[in-house]
Image 1 (cartoon, rainbow, N blue to C red):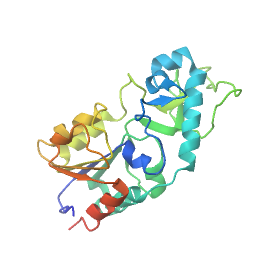
Image 2 (tube, rainbow, N blue to C red):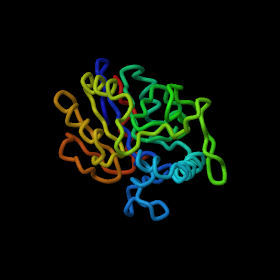
Image 3 (spheres, helix red, strand yellow):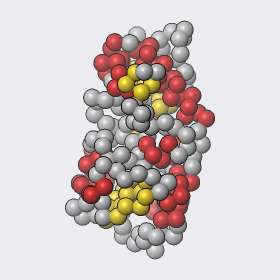
Length: 236
């Protein structure tokens, strides 16, 4: 059981394993393939330049899958923790779905973007809510300025969102917990080392992450089973 004092600040890093338990593929298993394309071939600036329709076909598929998914007990356990800690909880997710929000989380930082948002590739129009699936023969979506509309996603080779806020929260936290992360994708894989200088570090997930040695505690098992038990009565 995790005990959190009245002065602790908790940083949660949620990874693909959390969404996988709701039926959303991680795209990192079995070679990371979609229709015989490596994921880097459909989730990168180069892919967008080469074949934007293929990119939209991929993200349209992901939107359909995510629309069918529902939050699992891990999501709800984090909602309860947020309700107890309020702004002393910083929830940073590598996932682009909206399952945390569906469960009731309010303070969510999506470092890799949001699947149900889009933005113009050219102008400064802010990202907007978008649930459309742009499959052929649907025409390429365009902004009023004439620029193409792209998914609001951090692709391979792009800088993740909100890194300033994230590293500020890492500097302040006294408890760092990664849930369902692979420990491979940077910069998120290095967060535990950054926080571990001053914080208790905990891992929860079905499989041991690549950076397991950086954690002071590892709790192996499905996040939806381990997290509710671990956080059950966590706050003093």
